[in-house]
Amino acid sequence: MIKKFILTFWLISFFVFFSTAAFCMHYDPTNFPNIGDLWINPVLTRPCLTKKFWRKQSGDHLISYSETGLTIMKLKYFPARGDHFETKMELTNVWNFPIQLLRGKIKYSNDNSEVLALQDYKNACYFWHFPELRDTTSAKERKEEYDSLFGKLVRRLKARNSFYEGRAISIYDLYLDQDNHIVGLQFGFPENFSLKGNITQKEFDISWITTPLDLSVDEYEFHEPLQRHNANISGRVIPYYYVAPSSHAMPIEKTIVMLSGGPKLQYIGEYSSIIKMFSDAGWATILPQESLRTGFGWKHFSTGIGEIGRKNMHQLLHVFHDAIDKGLITNTSQIYFYGRSYGGFVGTLFSVKWDDLHKEAGLAKRFNFQLIMAEASLVDLSPLRPVSFYLPFIGDIDLERFRKIFMPLHNIKAGESLSAPLIMIHGYSDKKCPPSEIQEFSQKLLFAGCEHSLLWHDGGHGVQHSTYSNFLLAQAQAKETDNLERQIGLIKTF
Image (cartoon, rainbow, N blue to C red):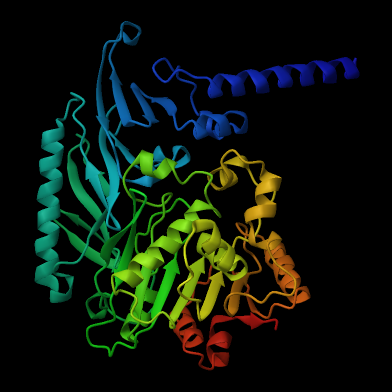
């Protein structure tokens, strides 16, 4: 009886797997039924997502995303008759990745029956669209409420302190009253990520997200403005940010390349305190934004799926060349790298495949990094991770083959030195990038004769300490860091 039950179960599972996978791989975009949370199901995720299309019904709205952009369809009483309103727009915000779009990026009415606003992203800042769906509160009215509060915010900031004037402002959230009118905004600054605030018609407040320094809100300065530049790669535009040395610092012709986590997270200011530390010391900063991070909507974003370790690395090389050609990098013998999480992956991959990546991209190597600092690095893709984690990395390639070709752990070459001195910082309690993988990577480097440094801390995915920016700058300046290591709780194994 038990054997019969097991056999029946496996036959049913086999049928469901192949029928659903085949269904997703051969869908007709013009006649695609609502299949609910398809991206959460590992059976459905990979073939559907690589086809760049998904669809979900939420309340009386049908929301879909494809090569044409985002479509929100307002269903009326007889959807079977095709009785609906719809709006289309091509968002720039790559958080429209299916796993994340419906988690806070769409603002619903209090009863979840209306789509009131859509969060988008441009130049390191969040802002909001107001689609016209013929709902009870008009899009025009919502836009006017939003613009009124935003204008009031700009005036209040200017009146409070001159260093707020002209700063980039990111709007994280909208506050609604019981009638779904916009009555408040939550805001922040990509050039000082430690500050956030709220504004309503009656109240105005700025506070700390974190307290890295014992300063009042009005004593803390911003780093220099983020300047957006674009690298053109065969007709495709890859944006990146440049931050000049501080206006009161003596420029020293050194550049730090910083790469944040991801690979599908756009830069919103999380490195602002580190940038300020380097900028005040006379350094310039480059922050690349590859296809999966930001840019120009779904078509741009979708080109990055499956390209991690491959063409996304080539995009970074093109960004570096573009910055050199434009004179943003003034001294190619003084370029340094810092990356966290996915950025740490890039740093470790650069350390073992720098020359090979240039050959693959068909680009001449114009510099070597003087130092690579890789924090909370991803160095392998364990098969134990859920498919939704590694899907953006591998695309259609077999996971095991991808690991061998493109992951740092499997690209160490015996007898060859690293492309740059490598410092790795990792947490014993890191759940996203397992410490065991970093330990194995370090041991393989030692066995291959590749010198490097590995520092551990008791925390999780990344260091959280007020003097960490000082530590990174001191490392880049080749200064003594023993006291800073003790303060932060870093333990050097070798």
